[in-house]
Image (cartoon, rainbow, N blue to C red):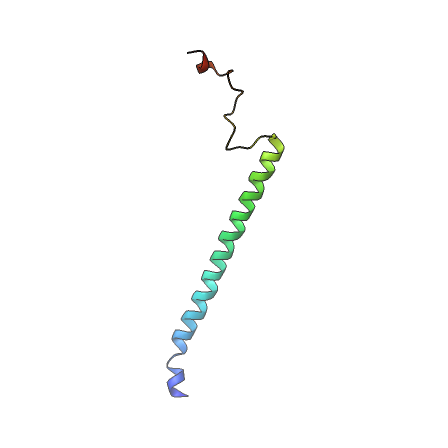
Length: 66
């Protein structure tokens, strides 16, 4: 029992680190998922994909005449 008692500190450190890292990865996953949902909702609202759209109709930008 004495030998096991010497390792309680390491067991506590590993358990605490596992819980903290698990919570951190859950938060990262949750926030990334929420950002993706918001981005998809915005694209549905506007009707055009955000990444493919130039932001104006082709040929109607003031620099197109140059």
